[in-house]
Length: 315
Length: 126
Image (cartoon, rainbow over all chains, first blue to last red; front, side, top):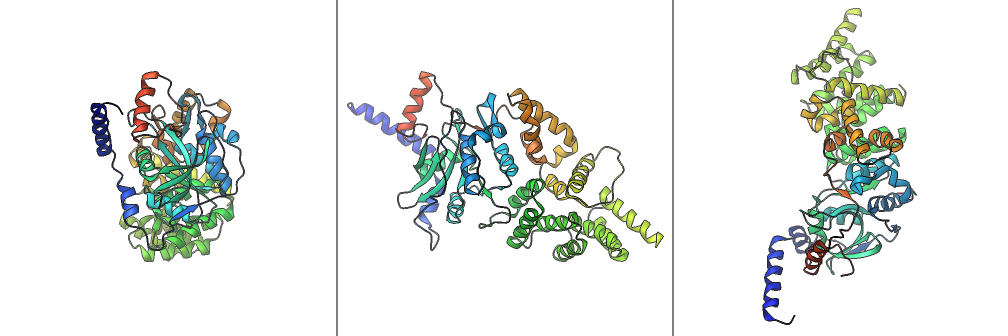
């Protein structure tokens, strides 16, 4: 810098930019380390796939899928996720492609701590970044494979560069502009980090259609084990047993569910339906009326009661 | 019940119970997991759109954006109801990760300046 004026101008613009781009998550992470937190971590087994032009989506997805045990080349993913006129891939299609390959795509919590936790659990994290500006976005997928808290950096496979080190602060800024979106690809039933039952339920219910019987069972069991109080996850498991024809197991799950959640109408309705099939008409009627007591407009619950009463009449 | 049949049943349940305003005979049955998932999000949208219309709309958008006719059906079928509802009508502006770089000189100059000051990170080597 030659002239003092230039220096002043640059200084001012830097101050302005710094003020506009605070990084609260980085500050919090570095200020409040979790007891026993590793200083650094890197998952060395994440294979690097360099991206083709605009193909960071397929490349990044191939990396996380590969790490989860699904060998797939980026080229094979292009047809699944690439949108030519947008020169990129949508987030939901990245999740859908993961499901197609029989892995559970789980969106993580929007926090740096979450990325750290998943890395500690051995799971690389697919992230969306906006490498440009909010008004001139440059969307980019990368895979976070490690961190170094001492150097205040994350380690990513990104674009054409493996093991790319990016400062936590810069990562946070580019990640925040992408609404802190990240996801992991899990072997169904494997849940090393339990963050949000709601997100897990969303992921599991979207994945169920693609799951084998064993995968579906493992999926729901893992959810119920991690969050035994979640009514939706219990519904998932109970419904799974019902679909497999195991009415006794299903009834058990729904019984527990309604005992724990005495105002949860869907649980009562499904219990009623299963008890009806099992021939316990008194139990079915009681459960069915319970569902209607919570939601008397619901046509399903009304129809269930009608059927129960009709069966009683025939008895 | 076979898995395929129960999947169809689940799909039928979602369809039936998304048409609140249409006079269809209600089925005494389970609240399916998929229905529960759909109810948890965008309930208003569920009232207005059938599953089928939603899929058709998003499919048309993807085709218009250059996705091949061979690939589009399977891609649509892989998306959940909630995901379809989330993106319906928005495909032109949703984030699409691709890392394309602009080529306009003026834009490049601005970006280089911002890169040096650390506000963005398009050029890893700088």
